[in-house]
Length: 499
Image 1 (cartoon, one colour):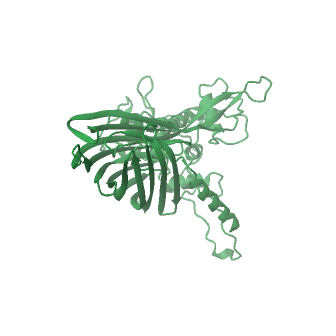
Image 2: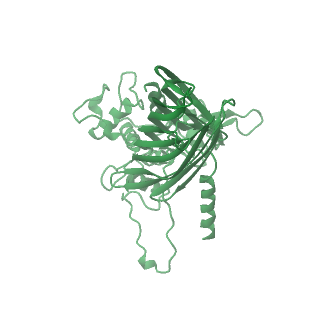
Image 3: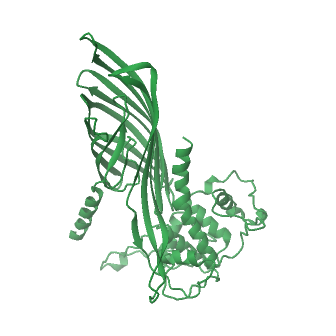
């Protein structure tokens, strides 16, 4: 019990650390941050003003709910502008898990809020804040994919009773999360309406009314990459090794269309249009990995891929020989995919009991894979997640040689992309389409569409070809590159470029 309490205290400490890397934009303000500083652009006065300062984030997660709190302390970057921003907001997220569908609904509600913005002599106090946000999460084996919609309204009082600023927010987010990377991109539209009283030249007051719009695109992206580092000394037991580098960066772009304001009065004809972009990056995190010492891969075309996977513990063992041109087995490939994607398996030991007769022995999903097998838990988890289904309802044939059709089907199922193929009856673009088994055709179609595989020099897919350990290694590394780079390109660069 004491040990469990210690783990919980450590977890709470980590989740309440300032500027923790959550790989998701903070709140709905378009701001960016790193370990040291946060910045955003504020529009309530009708003039874009960049504020900078500190942001503290605390997150508390439970089985079916979570709460996240943001605390901002900001001031204008332009020191000639007197101002400050104090904002505190807490959201609650309720998860409705549909394990039968492999999906989760996440509904976000507002718990508490407080915000005060001081700009020169004006004080904007958040009098009311309403928000409704809901996301659907498609829980796939190798990666979660999600999309959400948000609508919100903020009402600010100006100097208590001099007027109001109303900010209507609409838009949504898209994202993915896996071991090798995560990206969330928000696209938001602000509609701002301001009405206030200001003093005129005759010691009276007049109404100042204006409207403006702001389009905000903000993206937070994290990815892990492998890099090789040479070992400089010549008299060393190894020449170099790989390291895993985790990078996180945020980008934000504000496109605004506001009135031209002079001495507090908004022009009825002139507009202030422009674009402001913000960037922040976290310090890269470096992790040195295991050193491969195979004697039979030097000079092999797949040597680098094999070395990467061994460094990641995808391939285990103490042998100095990898046998790159030997066939890959179905068991080896399944286990490698589970490890490469960091798909956790449950290997809990049975609770101790003196009443052995009440213990029900576990039954393997396949009669040719024993529960005592070293890789049984990987096979069990792969079956439960729909990555593999066996050659029949109760046979896996773990030592059979792996074919390209089997390998590609496993990869596409791990991504959860098997339903992205057209209605049955189509033909793939491979010249040997007629050789592709019907059960693998959807996977070949999708794999080519997303750039995971290509045809050979004769545009053949070679679906029934036995894969060597080297070929399987290269395919797994390409798969990891897809998780790391291709998804980020689609969820960040493409959205920013075309919006």
